[in-house]
Length: 282
Picture 1 (cartoon, helix red, strand yellow):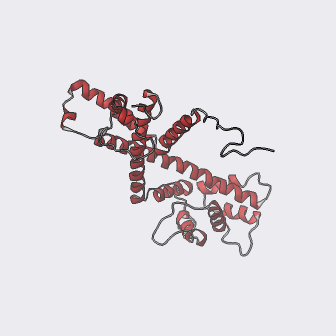
Picture 2 (cartoon, one colour):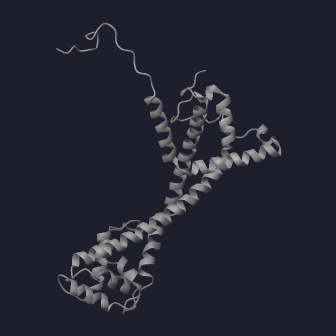
Picture 3 (tube, helix red, strand yellow):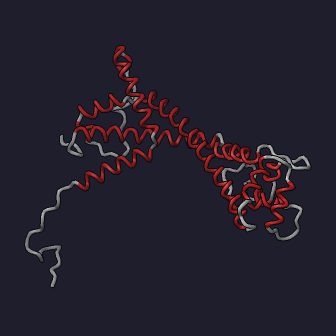
């Protein structure tokens, strides 16, 4: 049987990549469900905000973080009964500036902000804010922009924290799914190499994974070398699946495009320049 790509090696790799894609999609869906169940994004946001305010306490004994959360600009962004998972930087700077200048009636100028920050109790927030308004030449807009950039930088670090945790979860899920389905990369490649009917399956569609995945009574009787080979195959599959569905979708899409670009040109139409389907130029 002639394969889809005309190359046994390429077709076997595409078959394995298709399996990785299906498993990665499943892991991504489970990972998102876990993140939603644990409210992981909101917890990550709370951790980021705690790193900004660091237990700073106002003169009246109220924690600055608590006062920040109860500020109308901030509390208006929150749904009832839910914690934040995202906050616009403009809301952050507006609330923080208003808290620092709560003693000022009416519009606030740069000197009001500078004096308000100086009145804050000593602590990390006061030091950071004083540093952020330096070299702004008395421009309130530039000071506000610096505060927003501080918040955005913190959120960028928080995104990194979240991505690393998600990668760990994805790796754990990938290993569990790999073992549960007996997705041995070495076995997959061998099956796709030796069985043309499996190689003929189109990549990117839902595969019938039964022929290449799963456990059977014979799966447990492979001997020590067979188990060692299986562990290596599981490790390769786990790493591959943990790369994520977008990675394998892109690989398969590029492979299909490569095949299409290598198609031979269509034969020239017969019957002259003005034959059927061709317009003759004057």
